[in-house]
Length: 315
Length: 271
Image (cartoon, rainbow over all chains, first blue to last red; front, side, top):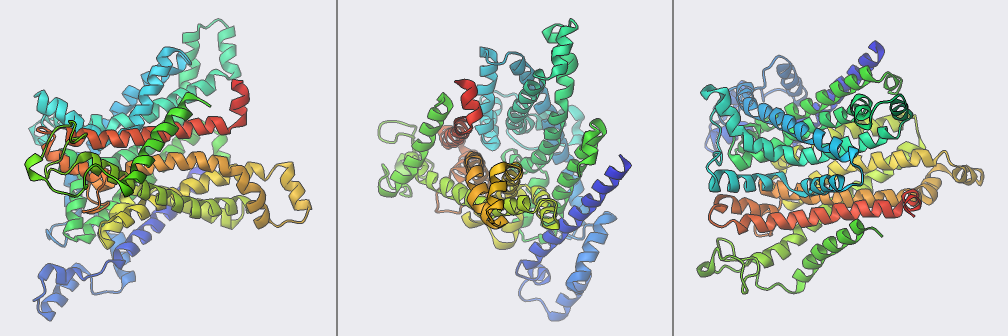
């Protein structure tokens, strides 16, 4: 296990370094000089030079890359070109909306998908299974931002249960904050739940054909007991992998959903930064998202290997 | 043929047909403003109603289908054109450094969701349909590389490949003449699924303004325009949404149906 962990850790570091180089290189291609963008066309040459020095733009590309990465490692993401505030502070503020939203959606998606998938697998081929499979087929086809608009139409405009958008802020209380994230979380969770329910069902169906399931039935367990004690537990392994992958989709997906509900999250930050050509903010948010995806996949791999020793030999 | 296949093929052809017909005929000019009849609900004159500028929604949906299909189709094309050769090469050189580099590269691209790639590209080059295609296309490459490598690996163990090798064919020729035709079915099925994901991704990107720009009609941007008016004119949001759902559902059913139909094992099991 230690050998495997070290090996995976190595490839984690390499992935992070390579993706940071790719992101930095792409942003470098962007035309225009941030300093002259900030000061306007009439800026004097010496003020421009001073600002470039202040922003750390006056050194070679290689040094700038090292400064960027080195800064990130200690939590210094640089200074926003438009707001002149630390990027790390801006990201941290927004993360308090995006991260809870993604986690809320993940919890909802799991809560819907598990019962639905288990129910469908237990009634394979019967009307209940067909109904669940039909519903998931539809759930996968629905764009989450459109579903979000429909939720607003029904539960915010026609029924006064929720606000159509905006975020109350955590300082007004946990319940108030969760309440304003509920519709966005449902919109994000539904398509993911449809995928997860299908994975749960097919994982269970694979397992129902295993010898140990027959053995369980032969030793006198009822169909239901065998399903719960031996089936669901073993099906969890592939399901957990998908949940890990979904977390990164949810985090990226929340960028679009935030637009529907006018939530002040990472998505809003990144779109504002794009239109203001505040590239250092874009660069850092993208790196953060990629970091999250790579790290979550790494953790899922480790969890997977801890549960199933056969995977450790495979690299 | 299964019900899935027939229903999926019917829905998908309906959308493709709408896109093709829109080149020669639409009920109205999709860009023509008609302010007096703005926000009309669906009726005999405007089958899907009109938007806030009085533009005919039915015509906009038809022309919008072109954008969705073109973006998704080219993105799948990029994925196949680059991903399949990479996957076949990796399989032919299994275990070599080349295989390792290709597969690690794949993992790396997977870490960039298509939305993130789109954000990066737009931040640097600006928004547009071409950039949406590139973003979705890049995301498709590892999908096709992985699936063709996986399928090719098991084919390389088969006797007919050994026979081809004994006959003196090189790895490149075997890959093209024997491996590729045998993974084609899988690629078609995966292509259909990626096509439907591409439609969804394009709609999402246009919705946040990273996709097709005005005046090119697109379903995602129709939804973005509808957002502030969803309370007074729900049909503005309902109709483009349903168009997306019908397309994606049709393609998914088609993909599922094709998989069952093309896989001889399932066919035998069913018979």
